[in-house]
Image (cartoon, rainbow, N blue to C red; front, side, top):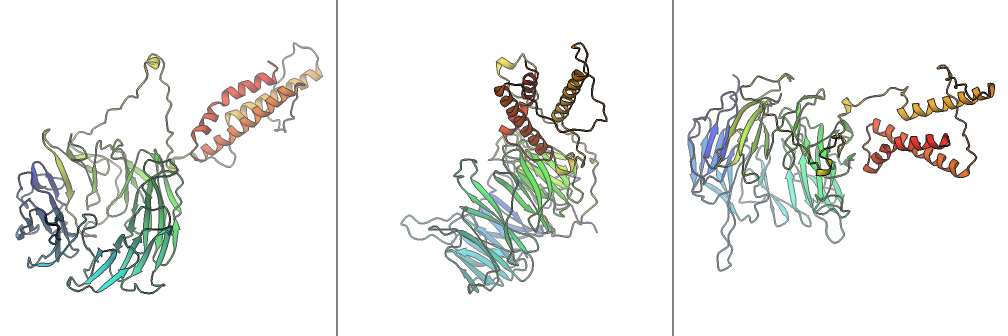
Length: 585
């Protein structure tokens, strides 16, 4: 029996409701619409069978499969909800408050037993960041960061701390996905001249100087993002500084590190300078994609040796999203970019489609690996709120626009467990749709008044670099460039003219062109008799040779600097000047 299509959950000024997934897009009867603007939070369980939401008065849990209400909790201020991986526990978080006399506030992090509705444990959790405990996929262990330590609980017994991981000041940690053996990555920021570091441990082996599976230290880090691959064999660490001391970037400075559980580590060498916008693992755990560099940004897929596997060139992009099955990659430019998406088949490195989702603030793959959700949500953007459902071939299958006086706050897919939707063959033909495609209006560049009546020149601020499989690949016998060809013809003509002058002194005889079969001879440097002119000729030839080398580098795919591009543009003027000097004008 084929699985049902994932539902869409929509939260906004029109309330909280669910919509049937493709191809129907009708409002679902599984969840009766919760009207009003007081719904602050909702969440699905990992397998999509349970749904919890808070409406400003209480938090409720329903079963999506049989539509029954399971429990309600009196939590009017709850703003965060999370289910444990096997639906055993519901974690809730409310903002921490202290009483007026300064005494400690009441515990604001509650863990409820989903089966009985009883509160298993309450904790004080002051910060909203990393508020939720982390469970292993089988719920055997659960971990919390408390006072710069990581506390571990076993089998959801929160009354006894089974283990502690204590270092100088643990700022963050991430549990590995998957089954035993469990691993944990911890980040300790540097202080007093000591470097920051990330260490990998295997639970519960935390004691002793050699307990760590791997260790990577670095100096440039105010914060880090740690990303485990699905098989828990390696972690990618994006280390960021708030300020780039060189002044090169508004975003601060980022570096990308690779750490494997076998002890290997490396700095991922990114071929273009600039910020790191996004890094994502493929579900295969054998490769990852990085989007980086000053705009237009580069995107590259790397293997586990941190060697580049495929280069997507440059473009207006700042995010990457692998499909759940790992066979499609979307490179997108959201936020302050126009919303252009590139959908790639990463098995064959072929471009499938290039749709544009203007003003998008949210992107999500459907668990079926065929459909894409893009949305414009408040408070990031308060106008033109709404969402679109796309097929990866670029067709818009459904579009919903919120009324002009309303807002959309959140929209998401119902999750499904891995393997429910197997990978399908990729199609390149756009699927039919009744929704008209939207071609964004081409924005015309501003032209100052002095240039408005003059012809438009096709000059670009940045030359975009094509993907590596779309670059020209010259053979071993490289054709001569225009400059080299022109110089060669000029020298041959000059040589022929000298030979003609020797055989016949008549000034009216035209020089005979050199035959095509004449082999290329080394050019004998000519002298004009004037040392100053000879010096100028020598310098001009030196500049032209440098330009020739720059053009060859550009043909090979190297990104040239602005001053190097300006040198190439001066080639015609230099050639004319050289010709005038050689002819004695």
